[in-house]
Length: 97
Picture (cartoon, rainbow, N blue to C red):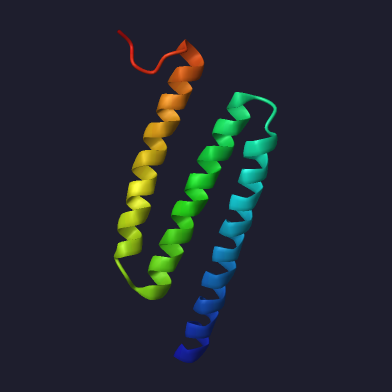
């Protein structure tokens, strides 16, 4: 019975990874074809979140903590870059004098 759950988990993990990669490809398409800067920022957010989730799935499948550390760094830098880009779009500058 546990062999069934192991195989089901493997298939689910591969399917989730495939879905995240497809989401990354669609986000890249929106990043290059987005008509407005806001669309490009949302595509960049979707791209880094999908990349982070892909790394988390790799970490779960391989039972390695390195992937979790990399995913945490991607999440931190992605959040900071989103805030900086949003502030730039609103005010035209990131660092106020």
